[in-house]
Amino acid sequence: MLEVRDIDVFYGDAQALYGVGFTVAEGELVTLVGANGAGKTTILRAVAGIRPVARGDLLFEGEPLRRVPAHRRPGLGIALVPEGRELWPQLTVRENLELGAYDRAARARAAESFAHVYDLFPKLKDRAGQLAGSMSGGEQQMVAIGRALMSRPRLLMMDEPSLGLAPLVVGQMFAAVRRLHADGLTILLVEQNLARALKVADRGYVIETGTVSLTGTSEQLLADPAVRAAYLGV
Ligand code: ATP
Image (tube, rainbow, N blue to C red; front, side, top):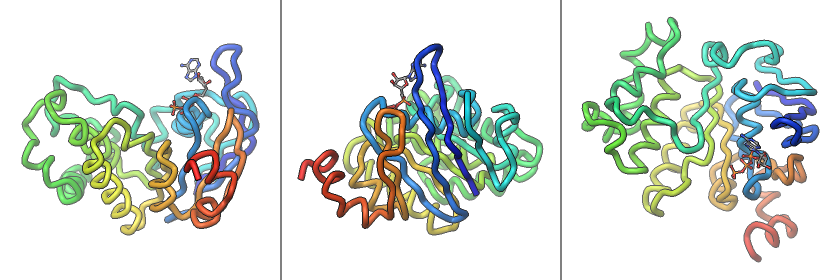
């Protein structure tokens, strides 16, 4: 479904990605793991079209993405739950969700999408009229995921959905990810919590200083001595 081929991405003169390549097949849950600053967020930004790629190709369902502007990518079925959530705090939960369904096709199916989001996160239905900024961190993360789902994605990208959440809430977040995957959604998950991410993912890519250093199934990576030493402290 997604094929990233050998991409370079820069911030000004500083190169953040060096020839990164990976794939995500339909229905897969793939995780990108690695330390702070390794380039994981930059990869998601490149797929979402927020950062231009200087070299390499991005293909979504076989179609090149490089010339598709960021605002048109949700219409193709690509959604990003950004790091830090980026909600509109002064709007209600319902209004934030509604903003996810901004293209015409998504708007036409908004009622069905609301039902899906409220089924996944019943709390959001109870709090539909509450200002998003007054919700807890975990609830705000649910709103951010819900907003992305409102665009009817076929590829859902999530940037550190567990960041800053209490352990119990992290568990709920991963349960939601697992359920979306079980329902057939294709997911690209960025996480610093490698052990947790590999427990839900089919496959993973380890990102180090802007390159893919290792890839394999979750079982392979969890058993890899270098991964265990560097990321699991074993
Ligand atoms: P984190 O988990 O901390 O978000 P990451 O793996 O997602 O880390 P990126 O945020 O993609 O890493 O950062 C990759 C590199 O690009 C880092 O060296 C970072 O300092 C740099 N970088 C990221 N955003 C910017 C920016 N807006 N301007 C300049 N440099 C940036």
